[in-house]
Each structure stands twice: as structure tokens, then as C-alpha cells.
Length: 187
Image (spheres, rainbow, N blue to C red):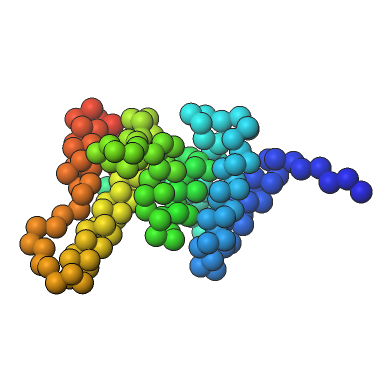
């Protein structure tokens, strides 16, 4: 008996597994499946280096239309839900969910920067909003985590720190302001 591996079918099964594992709070298993998915789809046809699929935006009643009186927040949410979700995003999200924030940002940008102002490269201007948000928030939380570790270490040594800050906060602010000036931020 010969088993044939159909990469598209395997990728779809992995995507389903990621969703089911997340629903059951099996974060490590979800991260493993996301890593396998990204590895599997590297040779497949892609757009900007990411194999894409769309989330369903239909409601329980099957009505997908926007009401005239929806707030800006709801319109933004609908826009985000209609954006394609890349396999790379699923991987980065899995790392984020298990608290590996730098690894999440690096997975999202595809490049680690040693010695730079930020530990992960800045996403392109054409990156979907959700990817830029995840990259930014992951780096913010990684910086907060590093700040808390520095405060705890100083406390163990009997020192007091009066001005411990998030090491990436200022650079993140600059990156986001630059993107805003270029009108590369949506939502």
C-alpha cells in the first residue's frame, strides 16, 4: 500500500487542526501544526511569499452586508476579517499565544536582526493590517517582558531601578509614525 501526500490537502488539514487545537487551548500543539504548515507550503504557489486563504465573514443568518449605522470599529473589524490570512501569520500567532513574542515577530517579518534597534525586521508597507499589528504588539510585549525581568533582577540584587523602560517602545513608535506618514497604516 502506497501513501500519496497531497500538499494542498495536508495544508488544509493542518489549518483545521490549528483551529481545533486552539479551541481546546492546546497551544503547543497548535504551534507545532503551524510550523509544519509553513514548512509544507514553502514550495507551493504563493503571493508575496505567503500562501493565502480567506476567513469567512458570513454571519449566522448568512447575511454579509454592513448596516449603515455600523461604527468605525465594526467596519474595521469586518475589513480585518476579510483580509487574507497567511500561513506565516498562523505560525506567528501560535508563537504569540505561547508567549514567545520575539519569535512571533521574527516569524511575521521573516528576518531576525541581531544588534539592530528592533529584534525583527519591519514588515513591508503592503503587509496586511493584522500582520503589522501582530508584529508590533509582539515586540511591545517582548519589551515589557524584558523590562519586568530587569526590574525583578535588580530587586533580587537589592538594587532599585527608577527608570526602567521597554527597550523597543521608542523604536516601535518611530516605525508606526513613519508608516502613518506614508499612509501605510489601515484600520
